[in-house]
Image (cartoon, rainbow, N blue to C red; front, side, top):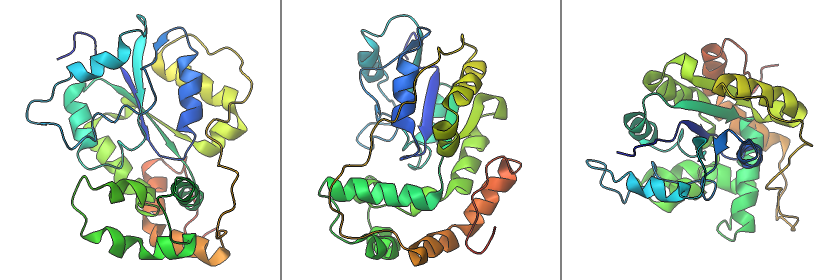
Length: 254
């Protein structure tokens, strides 16, 4: 076990402003940034999870100073067993989750995979083929990472799993929309939650912008309806779990 553990984790969700948040966190003098964003330790299926070697985490903080260590790996709340592994590593960790409208998240995810040359299907076909495409893939297969456009929007289920492992006072729930609209306000909430000095006023950070290339399709109203219909109960569950503080309308709802 590490003599000094990682204190803070941003565990989700992908394409919700976590790269921008990483840049903001690493600028705070009380925080010790790892060597890179997304350490992908607790979602690594190649490790022996009966006796994990946490020394590998230490390597990412060799030049990070003495502040509170943090890791920004947004797949953790989605990937099976990641949160259980993280809880065993540090049950006192404080966790931040950023949510984003699940349709906008899915579209951004698809754009990233298409730009990287991994995705060949148009967006409309990819979201409709997703269940069949992923159904028989083994755990750990890269397909679950690359093509889980709709599945990653199952926010209610993901939050329930996190809440089953960590008490509410160790969780901070935010949205990408709030981060984009009120960066200073979100940073004030984060500094209060982490019990660190306020962040200095910083110009808006918009890291990891969508590649400016020609895409073979654009999102359509019927695609939005399809995604929101599939995730309707998940969105209602998220709203219930957060006391309606985070609410994304399901298909057919205002």
